[in-house]
Image (cartoon, rainbow, N blue to C red):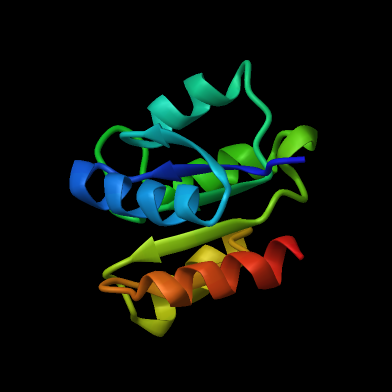
Amino acid sequence: MTKTIMTVDDSASIRQMISFTLRKEGYETIEAVDGVDALNKLKNKTVHMIITDLNMPNLDGIGLIKDLRSNPSYRFIPIIMLTTESQESKKMEGRQAGATGWIVKPFKPEQLIAVIKKVLG
């Protein structure tokens, strides 16, 4: 079964790069421009993992994770933060919200795929 991964980032070029990398590895992708868009698109879709930016308009990554973790359907879905933020305090905030992992931009596609394979098995 093909696994579906949602990418949430307000940068179109980042979303496209992530989606291209994932599709090359055989994953299906759904793209969202911010947390609000992600929540709307998740209403009628099943995803196996979410990769989200931290700083976005309307609903940031931390808010998105908190919202998803409060929903039983998304309590155990892996959520990776992919962001330029690397401060320990931000990582701690992400972990407390329920983030599974943290990747700092810029990233190498191989690094992203390695994390995904480790988390999704």
